[in-house]
Image (cartoon, rainbow, N blue to C red; front, side):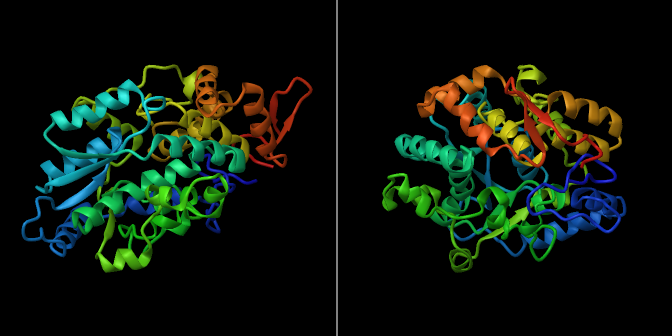
Length: 376
């Protein structure tokens, strides 16, 4: 395990590769951003948009996947108010046991801001069964829900005859998931290869007892379907020089976004601005930490270090303290939802802990073998 020489990204992130100088892909990309002509990128976007004129009889210019959170709220406002487009906002709705009131209010805020929003809601029984199967098989309850979440936008684009899909950050450049890189910095049609989407709705879902006809919501359209319908995903983050967690949060709060009020010790959310529509993602961030040696705080700290707003040493302190943060309340509600005991949850999580990176002591506490910022 090695760390980026600039930030706190370890080389254990799936699908990543450091430069010869020891920089992670995100830091390498950020360094190159300092020489970007942002007006030129804006002009590129304007030229790009001319290739996707509104079709006759069509009410919308593009489609944007939204949760009501900081990124999607900023995108929707920028696309409408800066680019002058009429976007259709697509939201995949969680079951009542999962969605937060804050998340419902933030979607309502987008509607009150004057946007057209279409909601899709996969069958709740299938959703729950697949969540349990995802947790049992991959120790990742979101394996199935991520497929539904990401699939819903291109599915709706096809249904509404909209060719242009606008997305937020480029996970290849801005996070380091290199398999998602496309032909250009804004080409998002390889988003299907993102680590969390690897492996389509397939045999393991059928083995969970779900019928094939019930898996439509979990089917990401194929490259052939993308071509047949002329779909193009464009990463808006590539065109915005001030795209960041904090900046997107500030822009969106000014337009009515409700933030998280829970403590960092319960969530690992340093600013209270991430995954506002549900709380169980906190469990997945904790599990991600046990699998790969980094969690949500690492992602926050890395961005702040690149922007020069946090020292690496301060980032190390925060990562050591909070990177595995997860409230017992969230664990309890998740276990109740999928129908397992807390002991069964812990047994499953312990089985997925990366023993190259961690040990479990006699009291059951997970201990790092590595030193944050140094590695092994």
